Length: 410
Image (cartoon, rainbow, N blue to C red):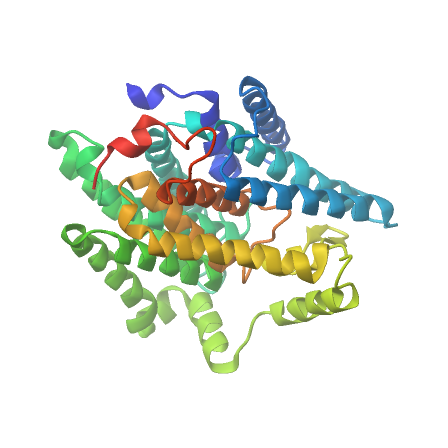
């Protein structure tokens, strides 16, 4: 029962990636506070058992963590020093920045070499299927004209994002099925993955969010051009089916997911961005007003906090034009590195984590914020690790994620 043999670094990875969505699907809202505390304790323990070692990390990961630390410290200073009547919302923002996002990412960086990647991703697949299925069944009573949410504590965006994660993960697992399960269970596993893909497409459609759909398609296209010829057939059928659902059969989409159809149509026909263009303009104005020193990227509201809904502009607002250029340059370098070295991708975890970078980079343009989104930060950190391995970066300690990460050949 190797799937049951987890270490604390495996647990931290799963909790950071989708733990809150999974937990809130099975319990009430009060217990979510207990979960946050538990996840933070796990992250701190990961850092402790790793000996607080961050010196021999891949260069790209060091740069990203340094950027995160600077942005969070500077944003935290702004939040503490600025006067606001919404102190609860300000404290919530600080909690998400440091306790929910920064500490778990540091924990991942300190122990990513000890993660059993393939085992974690198989377990994550099952948990995501459970989470999306719970969200879908709990929302069946909702009228089709209303966007579905994952649960009482998760938004419609979370429903769409987690469905996108499931879509990409299922494709990767499907194309490496023979190396994951025994031969006698292969057909059962493939049927399960095909049903998971169908569930993910339904989830993205009923969530009514455009960002997850476009982002998942970008990740899927990267998988398509990366897989070897003998495996492109399966993924090609999946991509074609995905495009067909959201592009060709527009009449069916209008009946099944009228909210998504309406939002897609308004974006294509009228350029509607649901108010994000206003937030983008405000962020650009903040950068123009403070091009060197930067400003506070977090907007504190009476019922919570938000940002400009663009991860790149978040960094620009916080660190000015030079911070914006640095982060965009780092993202472009990762993107180009993954594309140019895609022929070296030989394992399912490498393929999935690379595809997740394309999903996250796209989502950062339309919805993911930089300072308080652990999923987004984790995907960028994982991409830094994959790029370093693909480029065969030499350092005092060569990158080795674990033997399991490399032994599954395409």
